Structure formats: C-alpha cells, structure tokens
Image (cartoon, rainbow over all chains, first blue to last red; front, side, top):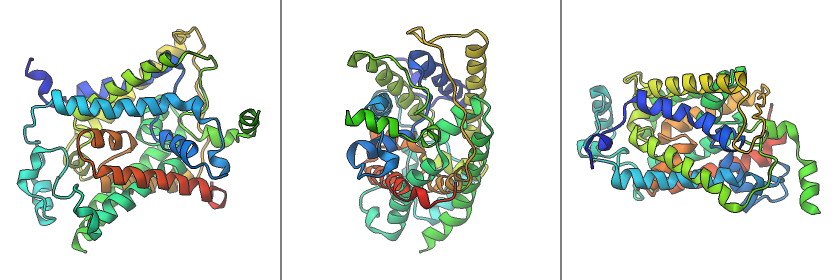
Length: 189
Length: 167
C-alpha cells in the first residue's frame, strides 16, 4: 500500500472533497447535506413522547441515519487501515497551554487527547462539563439554529443563504469564547 | 392512516428550519437504494479522519487562530459547494432518477444567533460538530458516546421547550 494515502490529507484535498458532498447528495436523491438533523430523527424514532417537534414520518429521513452510520464506518476504516499514526503536527503555543491542563506530550499521536477523552475523566468535573454539557449544547444549539457546520456552513452558504451566514458567524463566536475563555476556566476547577 | 395524519400535521415552518426535511425525493425505492447513502457516509467519515477534522487539537487551533487548516477545509468546501450548486442550477441538472433538484430557503430565526452561539461553545469543548461526533466514536474514542447521548438529549429538550423559546 502506498504511503501517501496514510499521510494526513491537506486542506486543499479534504475541503473540495467535502464540498462535493453537496452535489453528490443532491444528484443521488435530492438530499440536502446536513448531519445534525439525524439527532432529531433519532429522537423522533426512539422517544417522540407526543412532542409536536418529533411527530413526523422519520422513516422518510432514514437515508440520513444510514449516512451517519456510514460516517461511523468510514472513521473505523480510516483509523484502522489508512492511518500511519504519526504524531500530529500541533502549534507550539497550544502544546504549552495544554500541558497546563495535564495533556501529556505522549497524547499527541492520537487525534484526541486520550488523557482527557477517556472513561475515567467522565467522573471528574472537567470530563462531565466537556462531554455532557458540551454534548447537550451541540444537540440543543444545532437544532435551535436549524443546522450545524454541514447544514448551515457548507450547504447553507453554498446556496447563498443569509441565515446560514449568520449562524456560521455565531458558531465561530461561540467557539472563540469557549476555547479561549471557558476552557481555561474549566481546567482550573 | 395515523401516519398520514401525522404528516399532514407537520409544521412546515419547523421542517424548513431543518437542513434535511424539505427537499426530499418523492419517489419510493427498494431498501437497497439507500446503500448509496451508506457509501457516501463512509467516504465522508474517511475524509473527516484523514484530514484530522475530528481532531480536538485542530478545533482548538482553529479557535485560537493558530492554524489555517480548518479555515482552508471549510472555505474550500464552501467554494466547491457554491460552484456545484451554480452548475446544477445553470444546467438544470437532475437527480439520477430524473427528478428536478430543488433548493429550499432557510428562514431567519433568532435561533441562528442563540442556538448558533450555544453550538459554537459545545463545538470547542468537545472538538466535534455532529458529523465528527460519529467519526470520533468510530475512531475508537468510545467515551464520545456520552457526548452523543447528551447531544441527542439536547435535541430532545429543544423539541420539548421549543414553543417557549424566541424564534
């Protein structure tokens, strides 16, 4: 197997490929690229609980659930067979900052800091905030905003929709505040 | 009969807020037609991992302006997406089943601001937007299942209190 495919892909390969998801899904079946709706379909399928927002024919949207299952499988394939597991090339300042939070240099060979993203951390206050509160905000926020990075930032901007631009700007503002101000506070707890 | 009733009851304003629910194929197909979405998803999952978009570190770098990588990914994806949509409209390209490709407008709502800020905060904490959430789990970080569970819960709670929120 050639080595180049195991190297991380640069942005100018990955970005255009992601952009091509938009016409691919449209041409395959008139589907709008978007992931966060899958969370709503899961709610509608598992626990609609007479909430009007979840009373719809979710089986019609089953393609979306199949798509995210594919994302899960694709990640397994890429991690198991298409990765060389070399350390990530990370900005020095970030490494210094993360060291204060207890992220070990040894962690840098994975895509996620294993010293944070493990089951033991879940029981700590940091872990609970990161996984539980973080997850809740993703689910609540994307549905309130009507889409996520794929639905708004890629599909919405591709179709020149102003609400999607507003949403994307707000995603970025929220992220800036969270990464630069909230995260240091959380790790001080 | 009950299913049909539910469908006619569906609030289209709500549905149009979704990325997904408006322009759907009208045609009925055998189940295996859905396999094409499985392969598209697999391709997307591979891209997310190979370009390190699932990486918590890359997300932290993005929000600290320490790396161009994520901006390059999103920016070039949008440019290719825009060009594709333009080509589809310009040349009236149809789906593989010969249907007209339709685009829906997303109406403005205050949710794009409030919900957008909330999602942004969650994005930086977890290093994941909804797509990478599934890819992080596939990549072996099983604790992200907890994040996914809470993301589903968040969506559910939104549905529960939706009427009380400003839109």
